[in-house]
Image 1 (tube, rainbow, N blue to C red):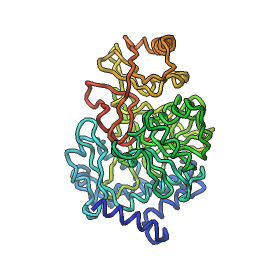
Image 2: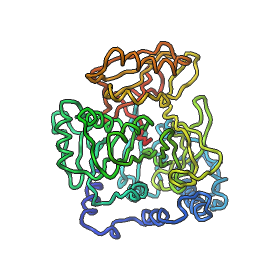
Image 3: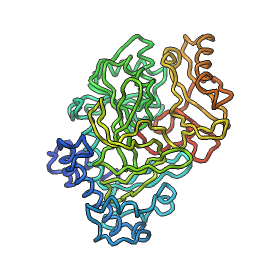
Image 4: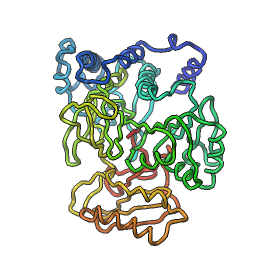
Length: 462
């Protein structure tokens, strides 16, 4: 039913007024997102709404979801907005293992499973986590994304250059196609042979915005830099991969536009807006999207989320396998002005953690590279095949000399030799992308949960 439902929905969107096809839940979410108080989690109105949404979520889980009915001995009638946050901690922590072993028990019995939108998170280590959503939830997710991007000028009439999983095309097909107001470029076609043709199509299309994986935009930006070109657009939206400071600095040099990014996941338990001050990245967790917690383990502070809008498959206290410490205090961001729970450093996925020569865990996404590397390398990837040792894989440009190679390697050794030895530089003709067109920044081979270039992991938007 999923292709039929989506097809009918998108055709309806093209011809019918929004009031006829927008669900009540989506209307409710939009109303909350338009509140003046939305930027401060400490505002009484926001805390009240958050508590009401959480109480509704917990009641639904206990009344209609077999997994929670079996494991949580709380009377649903006893849950109220004033005790919902306390009641939340009576629910067990869950992760991908619990869902894989009890998949059907996580689906609410008050919805028709055959009318749900089904997807999986992908599976870097085997089966992906199965997820079911209603059309209403699909619309609500769109509303939250639009609320993030609309302030920067994005409208339904904007012309968008899109590079992502939904634009992947067969390798024997054309690298791009125009669909309405979107130019769809296939990530698997971003190679030096086809990039001139792709850039020519972009010039003809004249996009207002770019919506892309960071690694794909990195490839396009590198080609434009080599050509001495800049694209003049209104804005860039990055999603579905980790974002590093050196990438943001590189993009600001190549594109004449502000860059926006956020954190989210297919499981829809947390969403955060990213801010960059020219040096560091932080993420502000939307209090009306989900309830965020930290759980400490050997890797650090894991993010745990409870989605507030998942009716068909509520996930309560879901261990995301993403790591970053939530700040103890609410403070107003000097960049965006929000006062939400904030993660000042997102350390990345569990599968991105490297093992040092001392046997400790090291967040792979903290392996920043110097800005000058982009002048001589089209892309790079950190690889660990054995504990304590790391390799920097690069695709060199024509201007990469032995002297520059030595400079790149010495910079890494100077920063990282206390944790890793040896550190080696490996030149590659290609760094493979996943089936969805992503390129992993970090690959850890030989460990449980390691992400390989052939696998997929849950959608993350760092």
